[in-house]
Image 1 (cartoon, rainbow, N blue to C red):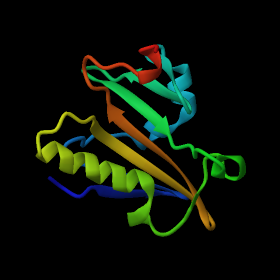
Image 2: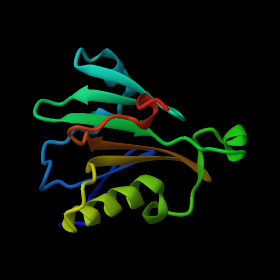
Image 3: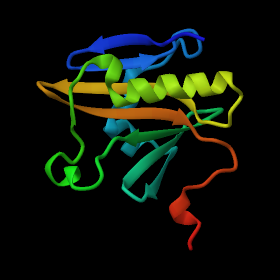
Image 4: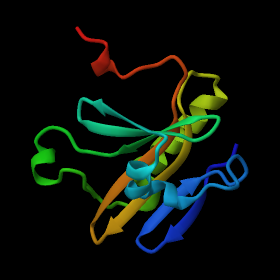
Length: 141
């Protein structure tokens, strides 16, 4: 299993596996596409929302990274840049790939995106929805 391929597009860097998903289109991170696609299925989570999209044989989940706690008041969805290899979607993408090799029931990572702006960055991750799952906030309590 590869450690991921990087594609640079302006300020954005995308990680994905070109062997597993040779036709991956970086435009998949474009919010307008997700909001205008008739296959879109919005859903809420505790700290914002994720977007779900019917991608043919799979349902893709796009999650934008948001901060929690006190830091969210200052940097709602920005993180301190400490290098591409340490960026949250790159680390999570690789961790999910490793967990797959251990046959653990984790979402399949499709792609991650890091958009750098000086000393800060914003990030997104697209994964495949695990069959038979639902968000915790929908379970009630």
